[in-house]
Image (cartoon, rainbow, N blue to C red; front, side, top):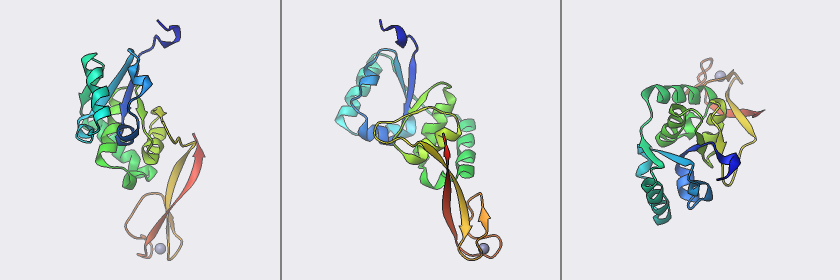
Length: 172
Ligand SMILES: [Zn+2]
């Protein structure tokens, strides 16, 4: 037994992890649990991914679940206020909501918007290719009157012109 690995680790993976992550050494660890939202299940097509999941399933280290409506609501609201909502798929939202349902779980993702939103929600993220070091706080500026707003709207509430998205970086 490894002394500093007495803590069980629970991971929730997203679409990018499904595409790039398998096979992975971390998941071979017997103290590692994997949670997969039902919505993501249909995206799992690669032979390697299925093989890894079969082993984990046989070890009873794999859980298929659907996130609670409550967590989905929290994630969507946060995604609207952070500005990530337009970059997130319905599956992404389910992945993050699932992580909220399992406190202490970590999301494995290479997706910028997923990482960004997890930072807002205090969910730990592990990545495999690319990790953001700052989180993005989005805002929108009117191309006509320069009016700045914090939430996404279709047109400027002042003059009706198109809005363009910008962001400032904040350290995580
Ligand atoms: Zn305007």
